[in-house]
Image (cartoon, rainbow, N blue to C red; front, side, top):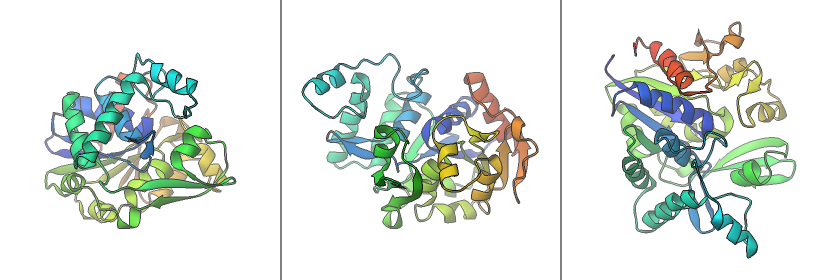
Length: 312
């Protein structure tokens, strides 16, 4: 196996799937995953970090393969009891899932950073790869819709992505600082590859890119930046990516995503269904990118790492 370190930028379920493949083929300590925290919010007095938790559950083998989010074999006694007394139930928190939110909130209140809390949780769950938030400072994704401005979870979960999207903003990004462990991973002289997972470019990757210092760190790194398209044959595998692109006046296609990343990436990986798609100035690699099972995730990880000469 080639030696070196790998950094992956991830948000949402698609990002976690490739992160799992990378985690399975790389040696312990080789992979650092920088997680989107633009989806974070306070709910019922708790600090919720959906994309971090998706990574924690997925890499620990605790994720629900049916819903695609939350813990497997979950129970819902808390939500049922909350509904009986008139509490807010639009954001579902399972009984097991509650534990991680309660513990995170407790530790943050005690003075730990989100990076410290996240690292402690991944160690307790037996995850060998590092998972770091993009920032320890709050950055919140907000969506301008035909119903007005909505905080991300109110758009994504409460309104189920139904309002038409007009614009996005990342509140707090201008004054946020790149998490120290994220900067260290991107500055590591042993860094051999930077991978942008097939996450929503606008809702999951752009919040990370909006943090000051991230773009500069990517450009300063000598390692190639490789992005995987979340669009296959004009459709998003999961989530509102294609719908959002159309509402923003963009053609839902792999080529549009490649254009969005122009000047940032060196290589763009597209599915076999998009083999004839142009990717601008980036180098194009083609292969199966649909991840239905663990073998698919490992296969895509090997394809992406192979761009840099890795044989795994």
